[in-house]
Image (cartoon, rainbow, N blue to C red):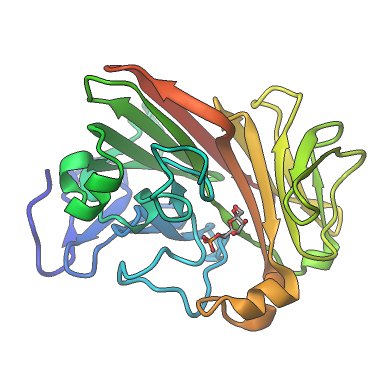
Length: 320
Ligand code: TA6
């Protein structure tokens, strides 16, 4: 475990080695940041282990973050990549999670930074071109009120890997209890787009979905998805998770999202009224520049027996 530091600490790298990713950890302002030798960068808040910034080699931000987002742990971050666990939304009919807040406690808990690892440069390769940052959250680190609401022994390991043209986030849930528990997992990614009215999403055709804007009716996606109003849908694609969901802007690929062991994709844009109703959503027309594409296992419950683990991941690729 990395020791408590007052000033940002640059994690050491070996002299003479190829240029290395630079990682800074600041316990005080609860952040970890990383920069690749080629310029790509990342910033993660220990509150919720929330990725709050991801920039490409040109310094262009890929994630949307509200100007009014709370970054002090007082509320889930409005933007970036909040982590949803152990319940998606609220589940009043599911006794074990009925008392938990919307989207669970992982996104509002303070995680620990467990350390970094970098890719080994292949002989002759100029530089180490990816860095993996690991974060942990386990039941003893929850406050007593939350422990009382969800009295299970668990361990979460969250790994964020920054590479040149992609970002991978993977979550491992382990049941350390002597009784089974149910959970749901989702990576609530807020992608930044230039103009939502110019966006098309492919890779969901013929997928069934629950339309939460239309009385939770179950429907089937016919063609590419465009966003022209409030959208809140839970998709269950019939295609394998390895088949990408692609976000195009003006016909050009902006993002590809590939899932691993996550059978659902939630697509969300609050549009005008919902954005106006959220105090931490700013600017109010910010919905024109964000699109949530959220891989998850939320259609049913994952039941973990004692000692069992569940792992799910996403890889977001950048289209230049
Ligand atoms: O993932 C989509 C969704 O469940 C929407 O229903 C909307 O509520 C959104 O999450 C944001 O939830 P939050 O609790 O962050 O306000």
